[in-house]
Image 1 (cartoon, rainbow, N blue to C red):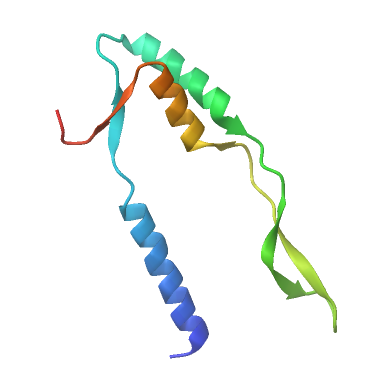
Image 2: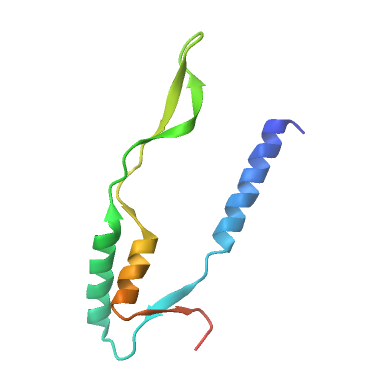
Length: 102
């Protein structure tokens, strides 16, 4: 098997493993009406959202005969910093409840 094919297979396996490791659950705070949850969720999402800059990708492609060009990553839109989102909800008194636990 060619080296490139092995690299693609390894990358795919790692990507799928990363997706499988995400813990499912929900945020809870006792005696909180749904309207309050929606407002808190909206505000925390708004606070944690940012527009990323295009950053150089650690690699090059060839523009011409001898000259490499930096390969840039151009984000498609606003991103949510999940760490800041979680901190915001925790500051408002919410706790993460893993799925299946009461």
